[in-house]
Amino acid sequence: MKPASFDYLRPATVADALAALASGGEDARVIAGGQSLMPMLNMRLVQPRLLIDLGRLEELRMLRAEDGWLSVGAAVTQAEVLARPTLAQEVPLLAAALPWVGHFQTRNRGTLCGSVAHADPSAETPLCLVATGGEVVLRNLRRRRTVAAADFFLGPLTTAKAADEIVECVRFPLARRGSGHAFREQSMRRGDFAIAACAATVDDHSASLAVGGVADRPTLRSWPLVAGGLPPDLDEALNAFAWDFGGDDDQHATARYRRDLVRRIGRTVLEEALSCRR
Amino acid sequence: MPPLTSTSPLTAETRHAVSIVLNGAPRTGHAHPRLLLSDFLRHELGAHGTRVGCEHGVCGACTVRIDGVAARACLTLAVQAEGRRIDTIEGLTRANGGCMTALQEAFRRHHALQCGFCTAGILMSLTDYLGRNPKPTEEELRDMLSGHLCRCTGYAGIVRAVMDVTGRTRTEAAHV
Image (cartoon, rainbow over all chains, first blue to last red; front, side):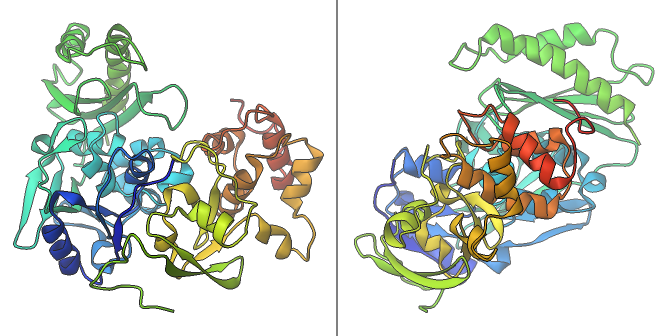
């Protein structure tokens, strides 16, 4: 399996990259870590005429927490974010979910922005972005715009990003005091695509559950707390949530099994999130 | 060495000079932009120790170190490696006076390989991983090894070899 032919550009600046992307149109693609795009190139599922490498652009290496957000630039790897000593305080959900992204060896090159741009429905980073109410910062030659995670993911490998835009950075809101977070997923083996992944957040007023791998995009639902605890009818609520996905059987699992995972893992992570509030 | 960045792309039909530091020695070869680093190492530089398995990042056989960090050579283009330090299995003994490293000796002692196809990749992962986490528990180690497919050993010998080298016995490690 070898990629089809393409021209390769290593631009000096983001502006140069965006200019090349604008003139390349639909035939141009950007690459940073390449851990989602390279398999697709090798299998020739994508055959760009021009590949623009963002991986060495210092402008895209920003990783900082300020004004209530953790911002992660397009060239920052999953391993670099995971190694951030303050991550568990800043975005505890991301700290819990990132070890499930691929493997040690792919996290060393793979980027968070790349996962978000790729938009696999079972991927952990898009799920965390939706679960936390994060944002995607898109940039083309003329302007920058910010899209809420809930509006960014449109379907499998389909996003609100235009062909001339790059995901410049993703932004996760810093965890509020008094909130609790938990993440679990089920896959055939460690590092495989999730059959179902569940991310829970509980604060003073509500409990929310985001589910990946079941619908065509990460999906979030919230319930108000009742007397400071999970709603007494949570099982019914989770059952309704599981059925609303309308999932189909596929080569990985049956729809029935996925519904069962949503009900069981969903309750587990919600209880974990409730009990670890701080 | 050509400049790292440019305003005009490297064209698809041309073989471009790519210079890397392979196991400590500067090497230059030529590559079309679409050439994978795994094929560049094997076919262009003659470093055949790196194996090519699935070519989509799952099996781990092609794992090398790029600037010290374990990564899939099949998910990296040769042109992306320009100017980088690439370490492969050939470099382990070279850096150890021509002798096998303690980890390699332990692999032999504990029958951590049979056909050997996965071994180079696993050793390159381990040299990075154990540098960051010198005494992993068995659970942590098996999590890292999930990035490698071995169809001969069932991983038991590999786990024993690493536990031997790191001074952790399997009984004190968490059971998985």
